[in-house]
Length: 202
Length: 202
Image (cartoon, rainbow over all chains, first blue to last red; front, side, top):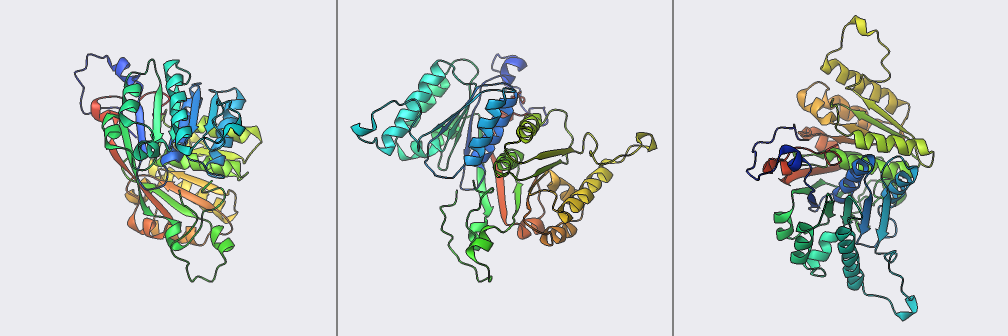
């Protein structure tokens, strides 16, 4: 909730307008709730600007985030704002046209394939707002090289905002990112023995 | 991101189903980004369940959250999910039909009037999911009595989920709430002299 007055005016040779419109890399990490949820909330703003939104879900789940998925797809379909493409690793990346009889890819291969596709999207400026949901895990696990991700993000053309979610975001990524928020758990219903519920957890 | 297995099974006389469907009070606090954004992200899930959603914005702003507002209203208008009512203190609460010549209400009075209306909504189970955006400030400032809020929330009928956002949520409220997440700022573009930008901050 910035009040509009930065504390420091950097000596970077940019005008305020140039600096204002600088494309951002944002990281939502920590063990608390709200990392992905806040990223999808940001996507609402991007949609409202008419920006093409690309969501890449890197962790498979049967029911998680179906609410956000249905809502963002419904928004994309209204034609009143930006488009929304939703890619799920769990259901096979939509752009992979591969004979399933050839044998299933490993989870790790699928993750890397997702990242390769994101690189292509960034190179061709396919989206204006990217949600790389749970992508931090892949970096943490070493499936995708953090240094390469930073290099690709640093060199991306145009006005492409990228938000990366997930626990254990590597320190180098946080160092590179423009905005890092750590969601801490203070209290969660699971602590009191409650299971997740429809409409709240998914 | 609960994995489905609580650590503790409470001795509260409830079945798992009853416990699962327990209406929740959730608090998003802390100085970092994402408190409101995550609450609006949760509203996407509520919408997807077909639940009536009521948003009450307690802090006036010309441009903040217009993206979420437009998006959630557009979702409500699709008829594919729940309805969305959006009430802004800054524009006058929509249910207050008062001659403006009588003199403007104070900010504090408007805040209290908002809370009185929420009490009526809770009593008649008007919504299934409430976002009381920035409401924590009013409690912190003492405009609305925290003990009363806790009492009203504790006694609310039916299946009404409530999420309260804002910095400085009072300790008693956090003690009472089912879920508390603290959003901590690790790094923000404002620190590097960047102002807020369209599509990102609003």
